[in-house]
Image (cartoon, rainbow, N blue to C red; front, side):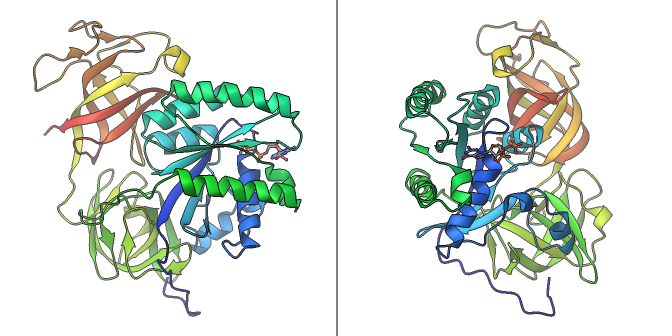
Length: 409
Ligand SMILES: Nc1nc2c(ncn2[C@@H]2O[C@H](COP(=O)(O)OP(=O)(O)OP(=O)(O)O)[C@@H](O)[C@H]2O)c(=O)[nH]1
C-alpha cells in the first residue's frame, strides 16, 4: 500500500459511522446508494459512485484499494459514513446477522409503489434481533406513487416498525432514480434523508481501549506488496508496526502490520468502527481466510465447542416449520465465519439445560419460537468468547439467532 504515487491521508475530522441499506429486492437500494453519492459529490461530501460500479467492481478489489466492493463512503456536514449496499439477499442476511457489517444504523428502503414485502419484514426483524437500534425509512419511488397510496404504505410501515420496537422512525419520501437524473426536487429529498440519518443515528460508543480485533472479511494480494486483509475493526486500534495474531479457521500466525488504509487513504491509526485494509508482512494469501480474526496477540482463542442460548425463529419469521432435535447439523455464522456444526439441546457443563419459556425440557427437541440453551460443536475452530452473537442457517435461510455463554475446552 506504500505506492509510488503518494496516497492521500485520511483525516479524522468527523465521527465515523457505519450504515447500510436494507429492504426488499428491487425496491431501489443500489439506485439510492448511487444517488446519495451523486448528490453529496455535488456538495463536496463524496466521490460519485455510479449504479453499475456498486457491488460490481472486481478490478478495484484486485488493485487492493477498495475496502469491500459493496462499500461506499461519503460525508455530511457532521459525519463521515461508510455505507454498505450488500449485493444479494442471502449475503445481506449473513452479513447483517453475523454482525460483519457492524451497522450503527440502517436505511430501510421501501418502494412506495409496492409497499411492505416479505424481505421488508425479514430485514426489520433481523435488524432488531442483531441490535441495530436506529432505522430511517427511505420511502423510495415516491416520484411514481400516488400520495394517498404512499400515506397508506407509511401507516403500515409504522405498525411493522413498532411491532419490532422501532418508534418515532423518520420516514422520508425520496426518489433515488430522479435524484440520479438530477431533478432538484428529488435531490433535495436525498439531502433530507441524510439529515434524518444524521439526526437519528447517534455516534456509537467505540471500544478503542480494548485489545485490537478485526474479523477478516476479504483477503487480497497486491502484486509486489503482499497480502492485504480487509474488514471492520471491532475493537481497539491498529497502526503500522503493530503485531497481530490470526486466530481461527486455518493455522494461526502472527505478522507485523506494514500499512493501514481506509477507502484508499492511509491512516495513522485505525480505530474501532473503521473499515480498514491492513497490509501484512511476510504473509501468504492462503494463510488468511475469511472467518478468522486478526487480534492483539494472546487476546483471542479459537474453540470448536461452546455453550449458547439460542432463539429459534418461528415459521412466520422465516424460520423452520418443524422442531430441531439433538444432533442437529446446521451452518453457524459467527462474525465473518461460516462453518458447519452440531447442536445438542442441553448445556454440557451447567445446571440442566432445556428452555426458558416453558418449552420441552430435557426431551432433546425444541420448537420454532423456543429459546433454548445448547452445546455447539463446530467443524472448525473459531475465535469464541462469551457474549458473541451468531446466526444459525440451513438451506439458505436463517433459522436461529444465538449468544455464546461460554467457550469449552
Ligand atoms: N420510479 C422509480 N424507480 C426506481 C427508483 N429507484 C429505483 N428504481 C427502479 O427500481 C429498480 C430496482 O432498483 P435497484 O436499485 O436495482 O434495486 P435494489 O433494491 O438495489 O435491488 P437489489 O440490489 O436487486 O436488491 C430499477 O429498475 C430502478 O431503476 C425511484 O426512485 N423511482
